[in-house]
Length: 495
Image (cartoon, rainbow, N blue to C red; front, side, top):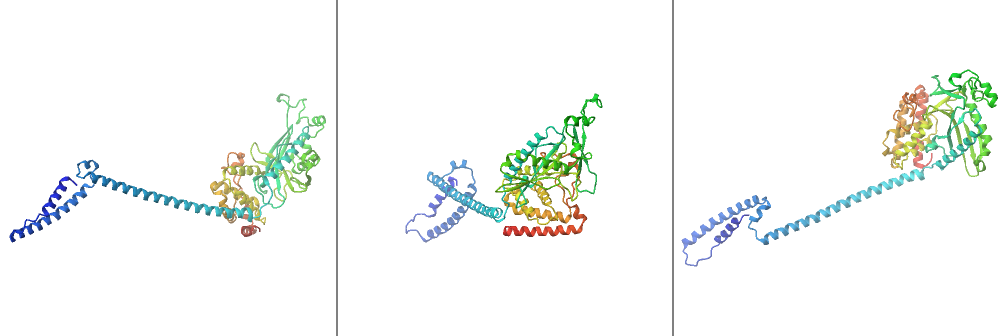
C-alpha cells in the first residue's frame, strides 16, 4: 500500500486512544468524549475496509512500482525469504511428484515386460517343447542335396559334351524343404528342378495346350532341327542339322534329339526321366558321396527319385526337369498333373517363383517370425486329402502378402493360426481360392513373370468343389477335422 495510507492509520491509532486528562473533567466533557470515540471507531472500521480494497487493487501492480512502496527493508527481505521458501517447497513437491510418476511408469512397464516375458515363455514352451516338430535340420539337408546334384550334373555334362542330348543346367531347389518348412515327420523328400536347354543344332518351341478339359496351364515342347547355314547358302552343300541330318549323324556317330527323347516332334517326359536315371546309376561311382552313402533309384515315371542311406540316416531327392519360359521364374516341368498325364505334356510350374517369394518375405518379416511354423503345423495336421497342402500354402502366402509384416512376430502365432483357419473356412464356403502366382500383378520385382502369366485371370483352386456338392461337403468336414486335430496338438503336443 502507499505511504500515505500507512501514515494515516498510524495517526488514527494515536487519536483513537487519547491520554487521560485527570479527574477534573466534568460529566459533559466525558459524554462528549464517548460520542467522539464512537464516531472515530466507525470511521476507523470504514477506513480499514477501504484500505483492504485498495490493497487488493494494488496487489497486481508491476514490480516497477515497488521502489515507491513504503515497505521497510526488513519487510522486503522477509517477503523475499517467504517467496524463496514457497518456491523451495514447490520444487520439492514437484520433484517428488515426478519421481512418483516415473516410478509408477517404470513399475507399469516392468509389469508389462514381465507379462510379455511370461507370454513369450509360454509360447516358446508351446512351440519348442509341447509340439513335436520334425527333428531334421532342413538347411543342412538342403545344402547336402544341392552339393549332390551339382556333382551329378558336373559329371554328366562332361559325359554328354559331344552328344545331342538336352544340356543340363544348374539345379534349383524347390518345394517345402527349400522354403524352410516340411509337413513330414519321417524321411524328408528334397525336390530339385534341373532346367534343360536344347543341344547344338536344336531349338525348343513351347506350345500351349488348348484342351480346356485338362486342369491348369499345360505345354508341349516341340523340338526342331536348327538351320545353321549362312543365309545366302541355305539348301546348298554345306553341312546343316536341318538340311543334312543324316550326314551329321554319320560324321558324329551321335543321333539327334528327335531320334532319342522325342515322341514325334515333342520332347517326351518319360523318355527323358529314364535317360537321366540311367546316367545317374552309371556315374554314381564317380561321385565323392559314393564313399559314404548308398544310392537306390526308386521307381517313378515323371521324376528321378533317389534315396541315399548310411548307417545313421537317410534322405530322398526328387529330381524334376523343366524348360524355362523366356527369362522368367516360370518353368514348364515334368511334374505329374492328374491321374493320366500324357508323356508329352509339360505342366506349367510356379515352384521357383514361390520359393523366391518365401525368400523375399524372410527379409521382410521380423526375425522371430513364426509364419513357417504356422504353415508347417497346419500342413502337418492335415490328415485328409479333400484339399491339398498346397491350398494351405496358398492361403499363408496370401496372408503374408496382405497382413502387415509387423504382425508376424512369434507372439502373434495363435492369431496367425486363427487367421489362416478363418481364411480357409471362408474360401471353402465360397468355393473359391485364387492362385497366388498366376494373375498376381503385385508381386515383388524380384519375381519375374511372363506377360501372359501376369495378365492371366487367377485360376480357382477350389473349382472342383463348385462343380461337385459331395466333394464340397467332404472338404467342409475335412476343415472341421483339421480344427479338431489342431486343438489336440496345441493341447497335448500331438494329434
